[in-house]
Length: 367
Ligand code: AMP
Ligand code: MG
Image 1 (cartoon, helix red, strand yellow):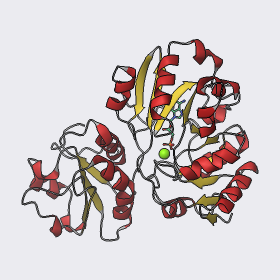
Image 2: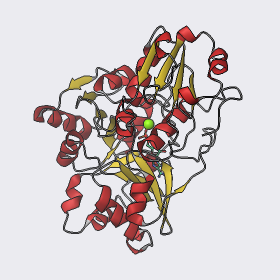
Image 3: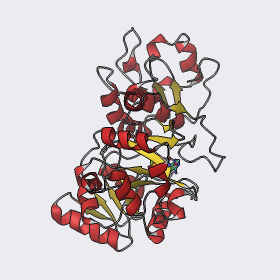
Image 4: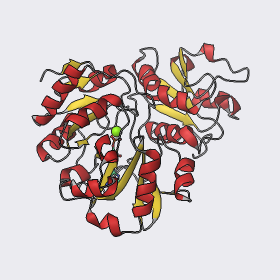
């Protein structure tokens, strides 16, 4: 199949909609990463997403909602129930007030809510689960497309399964050229890591994936910090949203969960990793000590000032650059001391999965 490359002009948006209406799939920019979109109400369209990505059917997709529901006279909750996306049971449940408060605070934006699904969402979208993951993206291009359609869009990230998520149209082309009908180029993504996913359950909240909205921000709205979920291994097929091996470069990536220059046995560590001239460094911030990064063939610094938002924006594209660098065999990444909050929680999660939890001798502490 020839993949059409579209810009974000009104004419191209119209073309993307026509393709989606004919049950084909299109990569679209969102504020988090590029998504691979298809009609969420239509099983045939959704199957094409799984097959283009080689994604296993047990890993469910996020359904993207139009901004239009924010101004629906019925209110967001009732509009989504009426449209067959949410189960009517949510209206009478103890999760209703959290749902409404979180929507008001964070939509449109990078927060995905896992809630009981409505009758128009097919099994193929949810991996057979009784819940559906929904989000309202803020990206203008994605919303222009949704605004012209009569159905929501199921969209996982537009990469081959398990690989690094794309933050530019060129990344999408490198992953999926010839496998999808079109790519809409909306420039680089502003946030750079995927949405935060939370499940509403019995009046409480469980964090399934850290992302663009922090746990502290969620707690400021709901009054309590989300519970965290023990991450399960990828061999456990019932574990949506929590696959261990994900966001991975082709080359081995090792992660030190602290700044590289405060690692106690750095010399030993570098020896363990082999020829350091073939090592690519992915550092969260500039090094402070006398540690000399210029002796490494390639290094990337996620943020010159250690800023989490800037680091997140650069994470996947820098990881991809090191993966493609012919002089690099192994990637070594580091993290700030305090990587449990804000955007660094999401960055730490992605790097940990990219490292496939590879143990690094005795020297690496568990995250
Ligand atoms: P991606 O957009 O590629 O990052 O994938 C969407 C993520 O949302 C996946 O990790 C899914 O497993 C997760 N997800 C989607 N639906 C559900 C659900 N019903 N319950 C839990 N996680 C979900
Ligand atoms: Mg993904």
